Length: 269
Ligand SMILES: Cc1cc2nc3c(=O)[nH]c(=O)nc-3n(C[C@H](O)[C@H](O)[C@H](O)COP(=O)(O)OP(=O)(O)OC[C@H]3O[C@@H](n4cnc5c(N)ncnc54)[C@H](O)[C@@H]3O)c2cc1C
Image (cartoon, rainbow, N blue to C red; front, side, top):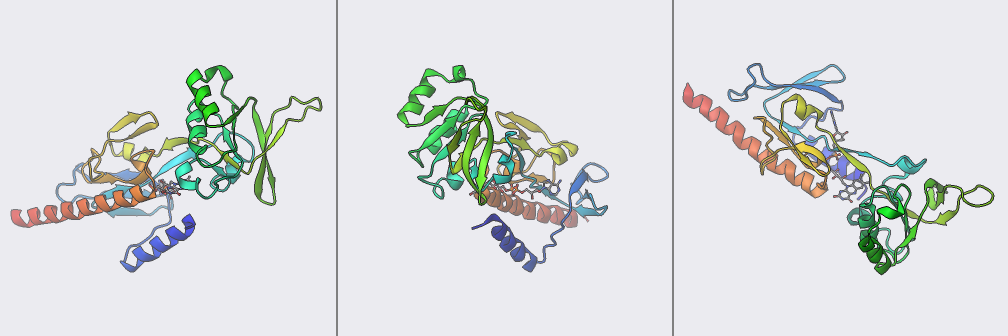
C-alpha cells in the first residue's frame, strides 16, 4: 500500500473517534508548573503557528530524519529506485540490476543482504577505500557473486522518471566517467534521532551505535513522568508495525495512568 494511502486511512479512522489532527510543528514543550504530573498537571505544547495545546500526558512520535549521501539527484529518487531496506523493498525489485553505494565499510553488509534479491549486484566503493575491506568481506562478496567497482559515484542517470544508470567519476580518455546500467541503487542513509522535544523535557537518553535515543520502559514511558515515546522516536530499527504497536502500548498505559490518577484524587477528597 502506498504510504500516503496508509496515512490517509489512519487519519480518517481517528477522525471518526473524535481525534483532532493538528497540522503544525511543535517547537517547544513545557511541563506543568510544579514539574510534576501527579495531580493531573498538564503539559504545554507550543506550535510554530502560535497556538498552545495543553495535555495531561504526551506521546512523542517524532520519528527520525534520514540524511542521504551527497550524490546529485539521489535524494529525489529516495524511496522509488534509490532504496535502503531489503526487507521493505527487496521483493518488489527482485532480479533487477542492483547497485549498492559504499559509504562505510558496513556497506558490505548491505551489499550482501541485497544479493539475496538479485544475481546482478555491483558494489560501488564510492567513499570506501579498497584497503578498508577485510579478507572476510572480499571472500563473502565473491561468494555472493557481488562485483566490487572502485571509484567515486558522481551522479545518476534518470530517463523517463526511472533510474537507468550510475555514473562514476572520470577515468576515460574523454574525461567522462563510465556509466553502469542499473535500475536500483541501495544506499545507507544516516539516521538522525529527533530527540529535541524529549531533551527539552529532561528525558534521559542512551547511546546506541545509531545515535542517542530515549530510555523507555516496556510501554514506551520515558524517564519523564507522563511522557511516552513510540516508533522511530525510540530507536533506529523500528518499522511501521512497531510504531503502531508502540502507540498501542503507550495508549493503554496512559489510559490506566489517567484513571488511577483521577481515582486517587477522588479518594483523597
Ligand atoms: C523509503 C522508506 C521506505 C520504508 N519502507 C517501509 C516498509 O516497507 N515497511 C515498514 O514497516 N517500514 C518502512 N519504512 C520505515 C517506516 O517509514 C518508519 O519506521 C515509520 O514511518 C515510523 O513511524 P513513526 O510514526 O515512528 O515516524 P514517522 O512516520 O517518521 O512520523 C514522524 C512524524 O513526526 C513528524 N514530526 C517530527 N517532528 C515534529 C515536530 N516537532 N512537530 C510536529 N511533527 C513532527 C514528522 O514530520 C513525521 O510526520 C520505510 C522508510 C523509508 C524512509
